[in-house]
Length: 150
Image (cartoon, rainbow, N blue to C red; front, side, top):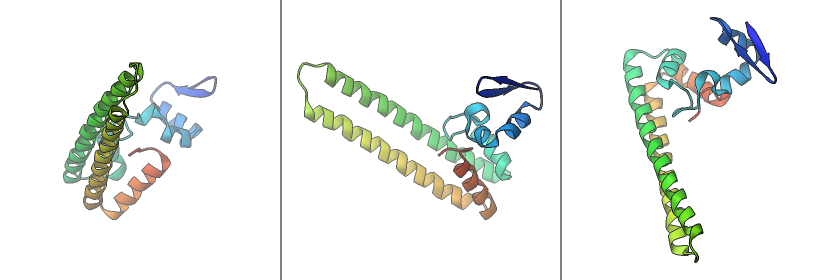
């Protein structure tokens, strides 16, 4: 059963997801309703990708390692961002502006982004080696449609 609430639909019952996706498949794929917006762009990325890509056990284990490393790097980037934000806020609160400290905070932000970029490239390289061509094509489609976010 579908319920209309203003500009969005909610579903109830066992067929709610299918009815919702049928009503607006492009929105369902990109929304957080079913796939979330967690570390890899989905709430349960390992289960979702294993199902969508038809992964075997060895592929699933390697994907779990890849996702765990990305999750760790993203968590560290989040900590780095909070530290940098706090440092910039402290600079703004002071009577005089210290350009050296501001530059250091900016440098920390760039270094954190670079580490995240490197982790993403490593993850993509490993995914490319683990997945078969048809699985890579399916993953590319999931990324293009927004169902999976890197």
